[in-house]
Image 1 (cartoon, helix red, strand yellow):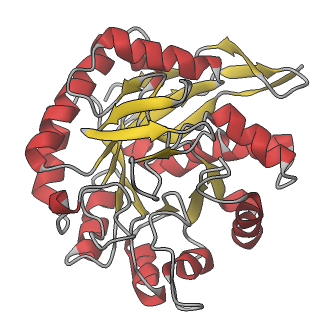
Image 2: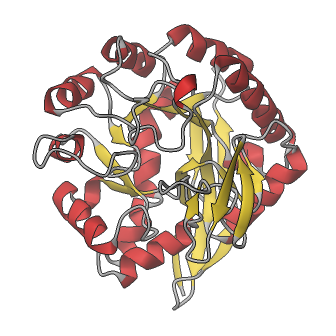
Length: 340
């Protein structure tokens, strides 16, 4: 048996049949999802909402935040939220499964309005830094206590460098949210890999990135700058079949990939974070200790400035692992807000 700190997922859209983007989410349903995550070794997470219209985002955040506040596990496992969009690149290939019609240039008033609705803050915000006003928005959002990430973006070397200058510190699902054909050398993947101030979030499910591609990205970025995320939707910890995610129909195939029916692009994943650790170890990309760090201490460290701004302290909890690298949760993580 091996003992580690609990895992922390920076990007999880749903789990165990529960969609965090669903207006009908309840405290009871949220607890079902969080309990399933605990069984997979996760002691904390940022429930993630994807691009939608301002009215839809307000309604979805209200429902999610109310469920978290009233739930048994939410107060200890959910310190805040991840907003992925709507300030993304709407071009085909870059937008992924996000609705292009909902995308816009960064709107600080919208983010402020969303924050005002919530008991817990938006701690992580993903945007495309090439959008008009994005660089100024990054500075102001970072100053307001948010970690800023890049994804669904065509930003080249200069824009990525300027975004990092402004305070961007993370690549959300590096290597994904991209068209199948990019310039051979002048492309956003290389630009993000080359920027040392950006850590890289990676989805180790074998669908978003092949094992060889994942190995190359980890080698080039460096293990100490890599984070494992699930990007899970409600099909994670559930079986193959059809699901409703953020108002769209998606299907989990027998191979475990989640797609919009009739489309080739992926729509989140069915990955559980403990399986990501086993995959990284099985593919000889990292040791068990390195893989666990990528999914526990490293994501918490990346959130540290935002957590400090909001006076939030995370207790990691612990997980006991058997020889097959299967987690046996030992104690709950906790979220404590300091007074003053």
